[in-house]
Length: 71
Picture (spheres, one colour):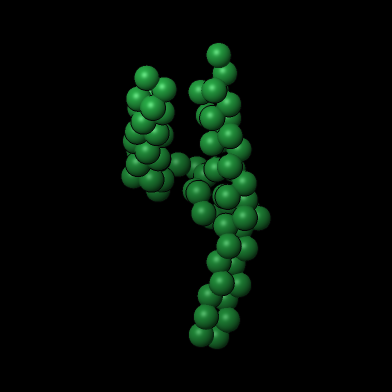
């Protein structure tokens, strides 16, 4: 039963992420282009590290997991 609920929750999260990605151009805040994301462009290379995006996703996933494990 617990595995089933986990799979359903994971499926809903993946579906929500898919909707967000497909509608991301219309959102005022674009994931991956937030203030604080590190982009360094060189002559022939580009280094990109989405620091703030990673933190935001971590907080959201932590909140979802906390809500799922709360009984």
